[in-house]
Structure formats: C-alpha cells, structure tokens
Image 1 (cartoon, helix red, strand yellow):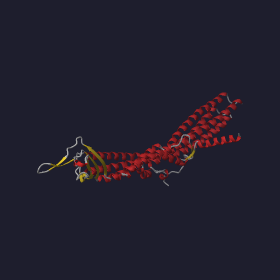
Image 2 (tube, one colour):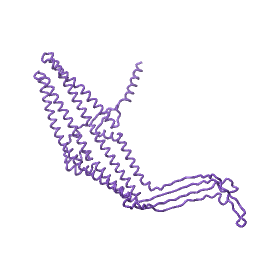
Image 3 (cartoon, one colour):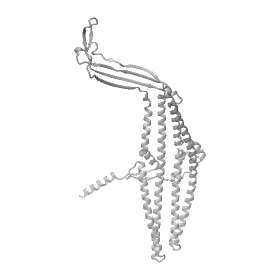
Image 4 (tube, one colour):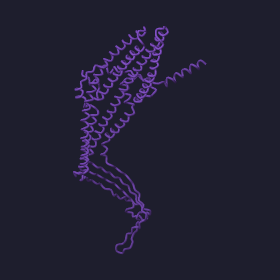
Length: 456
C-alpha cells in the first residue's frame, strides 16, 4: 500500500513538473529579442519585406520570352465534296479524293519584347527592396521603443506597489501603536479610528495597482509572444540606463545624426524612387521596343476512307508557322499634351511634395532632438533634488513617529508626514521613468544608441 502511495506521489510530481508554468529571467535586451522574433505585427512587416526581396531576386525573369503550346481539333458541320481530278482534254473524271471533314492542329508560339525600360525595371526592384528594408527598420524601431518603455514601466510599477505595501505595513504599525496607547489611556479612541480608517483606505489602492500591473504584464507578454501563464522576472534595472554619466551636445547630435533618422531616410528613398520612376516613364514610352516572335503550327486532316485518300498528302502535316521580328514606337508619346508628359508632370509634383515634407521633417526633428536633450539634462537634475527631498522627508517622518509614539503630536500630523514621504518616493520613481522614456525617445529620434550619442 505504501509503495502505491509513493508511486502515486511521484507520478503527481512528474506531471506537475511537466505542466508547471515556465519562469523566465528577462533582461531588457532579452525582451527586445523575443519581441522581434515573435511579435505578430512585426511578422506581417517581415512578410512584406520577403515579398519585395522575392520581387528583386526574380526581376530578371522579364527577359524570359513568353512560350505557349496548344492544340485544336476542328470538325466541319457539313462533309465537303470529294476532290476530283479531271482530264484536261476530255473533262472526264480521272480520280476522286476525299476532302477530310475534320482536322487536328498544334501550335507552339514564342514572343519576346525588349525595351530599355526593362533593364531599368531591375534597378527599380532593387530600390523597392531597399525601401522595404527601411520600412521594416521603422517597424522594428517602433516596436523596440514601446517594448523598452513597457519594460521600464513594469519595473517602476512594481516599485510603486512595494512602496504602497511598505506604507500599509507602516500604517499597520501605527495602528498597533495607537491601540496600545488607547488601552493605556494615552490617546482617545478617535485616534485609533483615524489610523484604522487610513489603513483600510490603502488596501483597495493596493488591489487596484496590482490589477493594473497584471493587465500591463499580460499585454507585455502578448507583445513578446509569451504564454499568459509564463512567469517573467525582470532582471534589468532602470538605473542601468539613467545612471550613466551622459555628456550630450545638441549641436553635435543634430549635425551628425539627424540624417540618420529612419523617417528622413524613408523620405529620401521615396524621392529617389519617384525620380527613377519618372525616368522609366519617359524611357519606356519614348524609346522603340524590339519585338521578336516565332510560331510552329502543324496541322493535318483526318481521313475516314483510306481507299479515297490522296497518297501524296495523306501522311503530310502542313506547317503554317512563321518567324517575325520588328519594332514598335508609340508616336503619341512625343506629343507635349500626351499622357506621357502629363504623367511625368504628376510625378514631378509628387517629388516636390516629398521635398517639402522632407524639409519640414528635418526642422521638426531638430526641435525634437534638442528638446529631448534638454529634457534629459533637466530630468537628471530633478532626480537629484527629488532624492534629496526623499531623504529629508524620511527624516521628518522618523522624528514625527517618535513624537507620535510619545503622544507629542496628533495622528493627522504623522499621517501628513507619511504622505509627504510616500509622495517623495513616488516622485523619484516617476521622474526616473520620465528620464528613461526621454532616453529611449532620443535613441529612436537619432536611430542610434545613447552610448554613441555621448561625448566622451
């Protein structure tokens, strides 16, 4: 019996170990790698890029001539009369031959058109693929930015919950002290009730923050392609990115990195593609096309009476194929009011529009970069001041707690100093999150890393 119990227990342990939730130690870099590999939105962008790559690699196949093979069977509704061979002198019928009612034929046709625009089409496919690479990089950059912010936000959300839990523990101690003092006759019952009310008011806040954290974790797991049941442990720290000694120069960053922005590169490539499209429009419509064709079309009549078949032609196949070569030049393309020139003007308008957009993006990008650098410097100084304020608030609370313990101050005074301490702690956390967000945004705005932007 004992053996059966032991085996059953072992079986349960093995099953639990198999189906146990996976625990993943996750650094910020690990999160980025998982997101890039598993994110569904990015997979869609990757499919688009693969399509453009395939188009680039197969762009040469436009030089493969078209080749068609077919067959036909013809049956006339009325059987034709027999063919007669007559004596030219007497007019008498010498011989009669059957004219077949049905025929069978086959055809093999080749056609090839060559134009200078076809060679340019290969380069166009290459440019389109390069544009696809930029679009994919933009999708990766957007995803990386959101994942980094979400990662740091989860870290600081957990720290906020810890502050609230510590606060509940602190108020619990105050409540225990108030009850003890009440029993000893040192404070009135109203003090106990005030402390208890403050304690109970904190518990729903903790539940709400935990619920918000769980929802954020689920969304984070979706973005990483993880299962909801997987437990993630965030091993990186916000301090890893915000406590480095940065020396950022706005002028240097703008001059060196503004052209490196992905949105700027995208516009530059779009302008280049439109200019190239304009060339193809004129070359394809205003240069001659060489047309080469060849066909092989054997056919044969189907006879029903071999005795009436012309022995000289009964087994013959007739060939109506041909080889052709020529050229074609659309004359209307040279008309200044024709669709070719109109299309070229439309493309040029598109180029001018993109140039205006590029100029505007460059101006806005400079403002964005300079603002982010300024925000980073301001936030760093704010964190120093807020950390000092937190230390001072902690000292004030410690002194007030001693005074409350000895009955020198009211609970409301202690509660006020405790609230100020918690606000100071939360302020530091929120400012650290702002600084981390500014750094992530600056990296995205320059398509670089904060280490590259730092002046040694």
